[in-house]
Image 1 (spheres, one colour):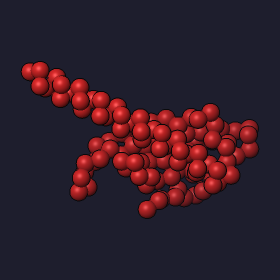
Image 2: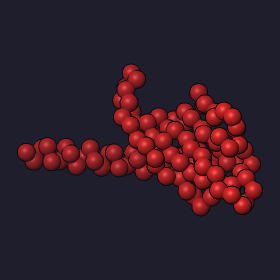
Image 3: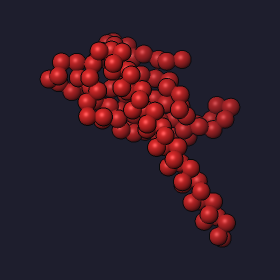
Length: 105
């Protein structure tokens, strides 16, 4: 019984550490994306929106993050990005890239 409690604590700590690291990567990518598209990232607003456990040859977490940015300084717009593990695979700045979002490969 103690083994399972320790294992559960270890899994929880690993997930928490991995999630913290992924959030830092998401903030980094959001900042770079906004700079590249000449918009301003607002208030470091990068927030986890969805997380899924995926399997494609190996297991990894797919995380979708939302953030806010402005083009004019007057109006807030929504953006997003997706990480598979720590790899950036999707950028969603529909307002800037209208009508298509940009896929990263």
